Every structure is written in structure tokens, then in C-alpha cells.
Amino acid sequence: MNSPMIYELRKPTNIEPDKTYPAIFVMHGIGSNEQNMLALVDGLEDFYIFSVRGHLSQPPGFAYFTIQGYGKPHKEVFDHGISQLTSFIDYATEQYPLDHGHLYLLGFSQGAIVSMTLGLTLGNRIKGIVALSGYIPRFVKEEYDIKSVDQVSLFISHGELDNILPYEWGVESHEYFQGLGAQVTFQAYPEGHTVSLKNQQDFTKWLVDNLKK
Image (cartoon, rainbow, N blue to C red; front, side, top):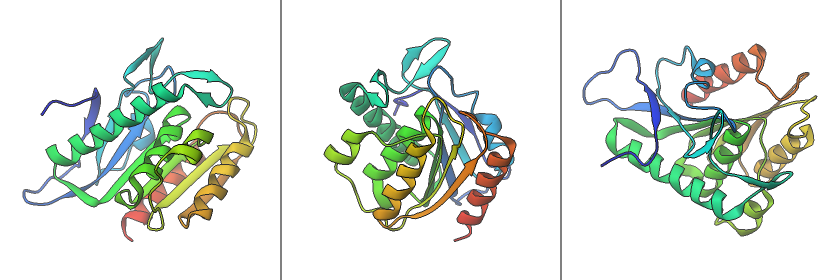
């Protein structure tokens, strides 16, 4: 079976036969690529890490969807992107020795948007989500088939000075998932649309701790 998307793979440091491993699916921001996100997951050596390239060209890099207005993705393009990413997760879980009980999604900006959407559509199939500076499109909340997320944990963070995607959108994501019964950790940082070292350290610790649960 061929992969439905281009990706960069990092395998655990020590792989033993007949053993399964946790996995993180990493999604980048608009105009970025699968290489740019790998520095954020340095040190997570117990995981299979799949850094997934957006299937749309968006110079100087790629994207998972296009935008028709502020906070408004083109729905048909967005739907296709979510379908492609879902197919990729299916592909990876079939092709690699992954622990299906410990699948994680991690994304920044556009990557955070698709990560949270995938979490809603895949539900408790996902163990945890790290959503850095994103939001949930309104049509996802209103029209998507949202699964139960009462077993899903999230680390949602947002810069208080974000001038690309407002801080309030991060707060709304936190409240939305909490309202669905998910276990949410929300962190605010005194920064703009970026991921600081402190933010990285915090979500890395969260991932390592969540893996033990």
C-alpha cells in the first residue's frame, strides 16, 4: 500500500521485534513543510514520529487547506485535507508497529486546526492532541460527525500577543473540548504566533507524562 501523503519518519531509538510503539502525527503551519516541525519533537525517542507534508502547494512550502476569509477555510478543500490525513493515519497504523492505544496528534497553526478537527472526527481512537496556536472552524462544530472525546487528553496553547490567530480562539478551543468531556490542559504564553522554548518544554513534558497514563 502506497502512502497517501509525503512524510518524514523518525523511529524510536531502540526497536524490539514483536513490540508496538506510541506514535505522534505532526502537522505543520501554512507555507511550511514536514522538515520544519521536527525540531519541536526532538528528544521524544520512545515514539514513532510521522511529520506529514501538506498535499497543497503553498510557496515557500505546503498547506492542508486554503482560506476564503479570516478564520474561514474553504470547506470542500478542508474536507479533502481531513480525508487525506485520516487516510494517512490509517496507512501508518497498518504499515508500522504502532500501539493503537497511544496515538497522538501535534500541530502548529494550520497543523493545530487539522489536529483538533481530526481529534473530533476520530474521537477516542486518539489518545492525545497537542494544538499550538490554532482554532476549530465553525463548520466543523456545526456539520461534522463529532465522535466521543471523553478519553482524549489535550494540550492547547496560544500566544497572548498572537496577531495571526487571536488568543481568544485558543480559549474557545479549550472551552469547546472541555464541554465535550475531554481532559484539557491550556497554557498561555506572552508571545505572538510562534512556539517558544518554554512552550516546547511544557508540551514535551505533557506528552511524556500522558504516555504513562
